[in-house]
Length: 192
Ligand code: B4P
Image 1 (cartoon, rainbow, N blue to C red):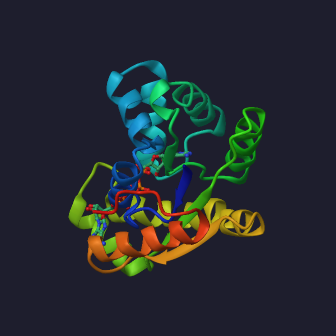
Image 2: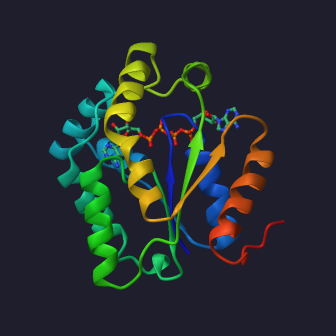
Image 3: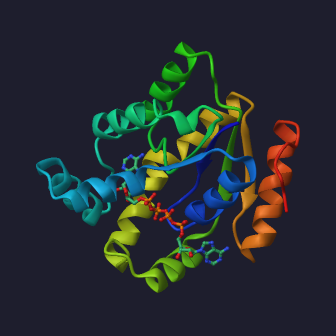
């Protein structure tokens, strides 16, 4: 299974990504986590990444694409992968499609989690990560609307988009995500 998880910041991507990865036994890949690891390493690139993330803007497509290309060559992705927070721009989505076309392993499904802005602000202020202050959250939401939201139409046209409302208990949302994935590909997960 090759799956993309789409949705605004704080919609529960990280939470549902873990459940999908465990149940389908595929590699969870979060570009946010990869970028935070780079930032924590304190390299020149890491310091640049840290500043961009703190501002609520997106890190450049080239940096993110290089990371993803390297990560997808690792052997734990042989059985499939779940991309959490990638792609976030049309250019990233098109590059991913080209990359997967060359190995004849197209995406199976794209799951979009829908959560309204008020709930997102409430959740992220409660989480309190370095980029979870109100000004940065509003900036991230506006970047999402402008640059990432158009990806729903992109994947809808490919017939791969499933949308799930991401509000309520985590387990109940997972049940809907699983049902949505089963409507696209036969149910093979161990949905315990
Ligand atoms: P990310 O790390 O992807 O952060 P995020 O969008 O805020 O999502 P996250 O996964 O953390 O939140 P989640 O919904 O799981 O990106 C951070 C930054 O990295 C970006 O702003 C950007 O600068 C950069 N970046 C990342 N990918 C990039 C790319 N491809 N291109 C360019 N730049 C990129 O969880 C949020 C909170 O909600 C948690 O506290 C969780 O416990 C809670 N929650 C989850 N489900 C819930 C539920 N059902 N009810 C209540 N709370 C819930």
